[in-house]
Length: 308
Image (tube, rainbow, N blue to C red; front, side, top):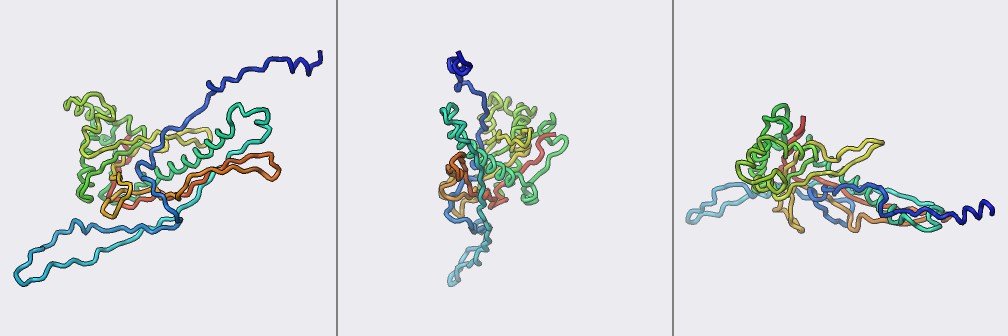
């Protein structure tokens, strides 16, 4: 029997696709903090109104008097320019001409989409964690015994003070607490926080218990997303804690002082499939146009460097 015949008769190994080893990105949280706003144009102007709603004036009118009059409210604008991001995965037709065992087309499409979504998450995290952009009364760098990893630290008081500060500027309380995994781990292991939870008989130190403790906070988001550069993995969200007012209104208006938005081209992200000129290579390309934008730094407070 020829070698070719022997090879032909050999039993092929069974490929256990159900047990294939791979990796999945954690849930991305960026667009929960800066909600997506779908837009049809790339260049936008966002009106920013002042705090005229809080102005107290004497409105008493005497007999024969005239009503008190206000001045026109000052309106500024923030320029938003959507940028395009794209990523391609490719397959040579020889890789699946005998059958697509690993469903390569679906896998390559998924990988391309994940790349652009990872980039969006990183852009949102960068905008939210940009310490230099916060006003002097809306940021605090924690050091030494104030850091949550120190036994003497009191994150509950720090968070409640930040909430009070925000309420005085917004008229509403911050409703969202966002942080990286290192900050979250330090928070749930913090000595004073655990004592407060125990005194209040809330029970275990978990997200539900902390939500019950923090007045006004409706959502806690922990960014477990991972970024890989070369051979090094790191969390996209670092050891900062951000308190913010994030609108829950699907149609926000000028009286809804949300922290910011992810302006995104309508219909994005999307994936295209194409071939090279010879028909040998299939390309799967994901496209995304967006611009994560902070529109109100009064609507947030950052606690930087929660961990030593």
